[in-house]
Image (tube, rainbow, N blue to C red; front, side, top):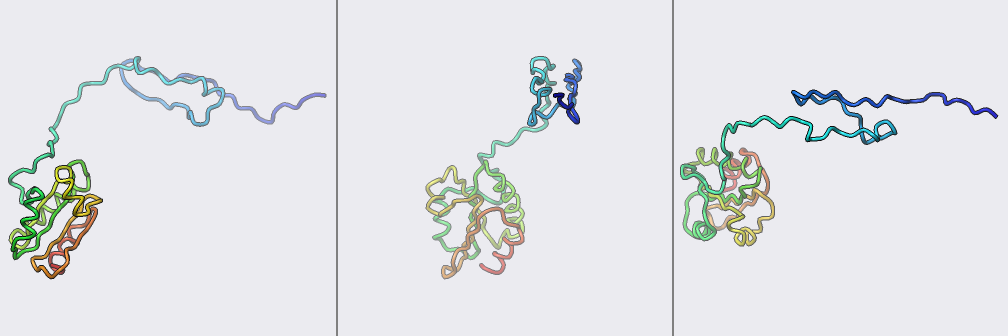
Length: 180
């Protein structure tokens, strides 16, 4: 009995990718997810065969983000200072921002809070609390997500408003104007 030839056959020659010694040009590499006999023997070029990367120039130095500059309107306070502000008499709303230096949304919120502090300079008091430095205070205030804002009215009969996560500046304006 004679066996029939396969209807089609696939065999691609195993050609290595092009290599240029003077640049790091990448060519199309075979998909290693669907390995066949032709691609299973393929190996990526060694990192040792590539030329060393060119030195990079530092354009700017990132701030350490541990200290808030003194010229900012939103001041970083300790837990004791915040508690004194809450208990003391105020005629403007108090906004407390619980943040962390490593938190991306907190950095974005800090920019919006600075704009809000300029806008409401004499009509609201905005302060920051670093949750890494004041861990127990943040835990007592039930801060579970960052950033967390507390809006505290000067009227002791009104409840404090708590927001969690990145919120738009217009929502903060609405809370200050309508709820405080």
